[in-house]
Every structure is written in C-alpha cells, then in structure tokens.
Image 1 (cartoon, rainbow, N blue to C red):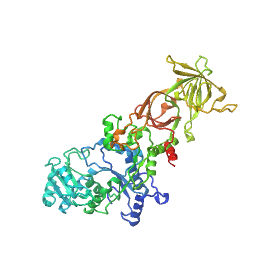
Image 2 (spheres, rainbow, N blue to C red):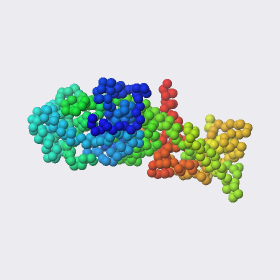
Image 3 (cartoon, rainbow, N blue to C red):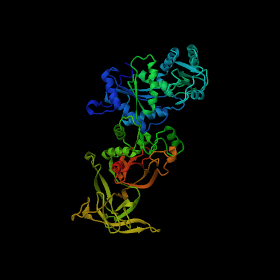
Image 4 (cartoon, rainbow, N blue to C red):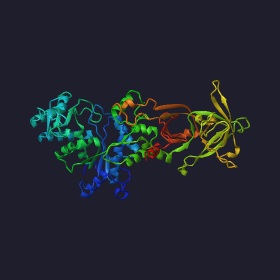
Length: 575
C-alpha cells in the first residue's frame, strides 16, 4: 500500500447501502468493491490548479470527491495540480486549503503534482525507450496545425521516427536547460489519425525557464496536464479519479498512458460528472480575473463574486453550499441550475441558525407624543424582551430598548396611502414589533416640504402587541430606538449579471454585467445588540433579509439573501 492510502477522511462515514444515496459513480464504486478491484480500498482526490481562487463550481467537485470517499470509508487527498509555473502562486495554494477547510472537509494528505516530477520524468524516459515517445523540434503553432481537426487528417511530425537514443539525449539536455522556451517538446507516439484529437501525439513536456512555487529552479521542463494527471493518480493510489464532463474526451489518453507504464497495481478509473453551473453567474477564471483587474468588483472576495471567498464574505453558510451540491447530485447531463435554488438552501440554513435583530435601512423619525418622560424631562426608556431566534428556543432572548423617539422605514409610512397599503398613515393604527400599538396624528416637514418626522400616540395598554378590547391591526413594523441606535452601513446586492445566461446574446458574458449590482446604504440605524455580532456572523434583519457582518469593517453588513423564497415562487409558476 502506498504512503498516501493510510490517511483517512475525517468526517463521519455514512453507509450508502442503508442511507439510499446512489448515483452512477457510487454504483461504480460498489461494483469495484464487490469485485475486489482495488483490494477493498476507495481513494479519491480533489486536484485544483493553484492559479486562482476556488468558486462555486469547485464546491461541487469537492463535495463529490470528499463525499464519495466518506461514504465508503475511504480517503480523499488534496492535490495541487501545479504543472504551470507561469500562472501558479503560493497565495492560491493557501486560499485553496483555507476554502476546503471552511467547507468542512479535511484532506487525508495534501500533495502537489510537482512532488512527482522525478517519477514522471523517469516514466517519460521509459516511454521513449519503449518507442512510445519522441522529442519534436517543431514549434507549438506547427504542431497544432499538423494535428488537423475533426474530419481532417493529422500530419506526422518529421521527428516522429527519431531514434530513441537521440530523443533520450535531447530530453536530458532539455532538462539540463540547454534549449530556449518553445524550441522543443516531448510528445507521445500514439496515432495521428485517431478520431479522438487528444490521441494525436499529445505533448508531454514543454520547456519553461520559470521559477516554480514549490520546486524553485530545479526544473525547466514541465509536464502537461494530461501527462501529469493520471500518473499522479496512480502514484498516490487513487482508485476513482472523478472529473467534470469536459474531461471525458481526455479519458482515452488517460487510459493509454496508464496502460503503457509499469504500474505497481491496478490503474485508476476515471469517470466524469456534470459541472455545476448557475444562472446569472460565470465561473471562467480568466473573466473573473478581468473583473478584479478592471475594478468592476473590489477583489476575489467581493460578495458578488461566485468564488468561495466571496460567498463566504457575503454570509453563505458552508452547510448550505454542501447541502445544495449534494442535492444537485452526480449526473451525466450538463445543465444550468437556477441561482434561486442555491439561495433557497442558504435561506433555509440561516432561518435555522441566525439571530434576529432589528435595523432600519432608510430611517424616518417616529415620535410618540404621549410617551412618558423621566424626572429630568427626557423620554423614559423601557426594555422589551424579544426572542433571538424563534426556530431555536435555546438561543434565548435579549432586552431591546424602547423609547418615545424611534426610527421606522420610510417605506412604512405614506401620507397619502395607495390602495392596499396597510402600514402607517395619518389616522391609522399599526403595531410596533414586540412593543405597542401606535396611531399617526401628524407629520413634520422640512423647508422643502418633505416629511422628516411622523408624530403618533401609543396605547399603553397594548404592550407586547395585544389590547384588552382585542382589536387587530393589519401591519406590524420593525423599529429602532433613536437614542440607542447604532450607525451602520448595509451593502445590498443585485445579480452581478443581468442575463440568466451571461453572454447568450453576444457571446461575451461581460457584456451582460449589471451596472446596478451594488447599493451601499449609509446611515442605517440598528439595535444595540448588533454591536456584539462576530465578524462574518449572519443575522436576520427582521422584515429585510439576512445580513453578514464584514470581516474587516465592523460597521458594514452585507445582505446575504432576502427573506422571500424566490425559488419556491419559481416552482409554483412553473407547475
């Protein structure tokens, strides 16, 4: 058994035979276990390239690889697929590790594809000696042209039949740094007329005189993805190599390499599943990088970004992302999931866990003219006991200050109410959340005639929201006591892309950017208890939505999702 197989995935194992969890990949694993293909072992890996930050699409692959390993008592390793020194950085390596841990997974072992450069090189020399690889002196453009295309024949390189001894000598000199970038490469000798383009003598090594984040200046030739991937799986002892569907056409090459190498055990099995794509979202690293570089977003962790860092900063719970990816399942058909469905999982999780607080986004002063004063003539202060989370009694309650000077939402008052407007207006009575019934009696205007203050009376017999005569009101408003209010900022988000499928109309997703995706609201008034919220903690602003406290700016709160379940409404309209 190899040195990586001893580690074990750390989350509790689930028995899929009894839980009923099933898909075509799990069925394959069960079959291999029944046949003893890998001696009863199950080992997967998550192999991101450290050239950017993980996004929601990666979450699907993480959940699949770690989840399947856990289901069968196996191990899942994290392997950094670092074969391109020009684009990879230690910053990305660190962020990948952190994001996986945040999602709740802990790799059996953390390894790098670059850890295997020595073995990969030895195997390359082996294939040359076997007559299955050769050094080509042509440039990349010529090689690409000679490959032909679908329905077009390939043209064999004039160096294809180069003697093995000559190719070995050139490969060793390539490794020694004798040749400039792009002057030579190592190719597998397979079939230049194969229908599968990946089998038309693919490149295995290219020359790159570049510093590598893990190996430094030790190497100046670097393996391609296809040469490193399957072989790294074999070195680690991976049993089931799970990829997204775009790698399905690579599978014959994956199998060809493994079939022609002197492996110690059975070759890994590659299988592909559908990627996770969401409406109003892109996951192209190149385009996401452009958003950052052009200043369209504030960084990779901007809460509008589909990166795990962005979703985390916005307040998406890791549990909701895991549950959504699990429910999406492993299928063979690519599709685009509605982002409202993911938000529904987020909302469901936060409804269960988030503390309730009151905040007023666009404050309008409400003065209770008959509210009692203390001995100094100042408005008296009462403390109301409000429940922290009605979904969990163990979260207890909090004391919230109530006074004769309050803030309510501007939208909760209309001097001339439109039809079906049941909130506060002249002569109308409403209930203040957890407090009293109040009736509007007058307004105060500024020099321009705008209403800047609402005057009202309160019913002292209605504390807690009920009256001796049992009368009812049609609206309950949230509020904040003005003398006790915290001043905060709220970031309200719309879709980063206005089109459901960005780029569907023009072919360029960035053409569909929504210029109004962020509304930063200053002067928000919040109840005092919000001061104790931890960085990153999500609370429910009653009647407004779920908001996450920023991890760096203590007065900034990001709206995670609203309270309305748009996914449920979409399902109703579709049924």
